[in-house]
Amino acid sequence: MKTMTRTVIMQGFVRMLERMPFDKITVSALTKECGISHNTFYYHYQDIYALLEAFFHQYIMSYTVEDGRMDWAEMARVLLNNCKDNKRLVYHAFNSLSRERLERVVFDSSDDFFSAYVRQLAGDRPISEGKLRSVSELLRYCFFGYFLKFLWNNMEDDVGEIIESMSLMFEDFARHTLE
Image 1 (cartoon, rainbow, N blue to C red):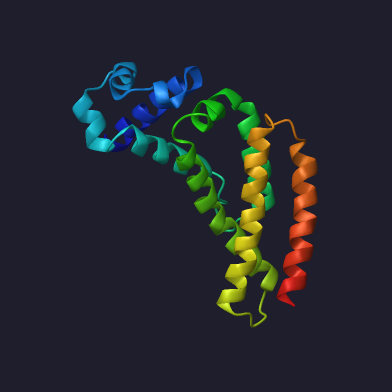
Image 2 (tube, one colour):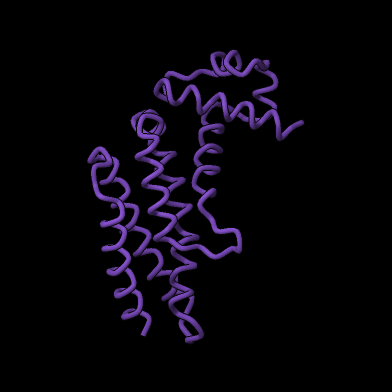
């Protein structure tokens, strides 16, 4: 029942986010949209920002691969194309007061993807944790910067072309640095 109620709240939130900017969504309007009480909402979420963070986390983590492996390029391609497909929803969240939360979730979530990628490239070589972390962080910063630019430029970039180019550069950089 608890999971079902969270699903109802999340679905109602997404419907509202498609229609209006995040900063216009209130708990009262959301509970009315979902047909639940305020107490029910607050049982599941501390506030509307906690719900937004849960939405971002759920959205980003849906790009993990079932067997635990993470392909950053495929994740990025799917994520960016999905952003394009849901442009209105993304900009309703991105252009609101909660931009920092979106940025933090994308930034923090991409850490797992790039750490896995760098470890895969390192293979069995004895490379220090510090070096692995430095390489994965630099790649993450590059991707995050591109993600922001992608949003600022109205998502007009050719995602496949950009990810292919980044992938080649990232692999060259990581392989060279890890030698």
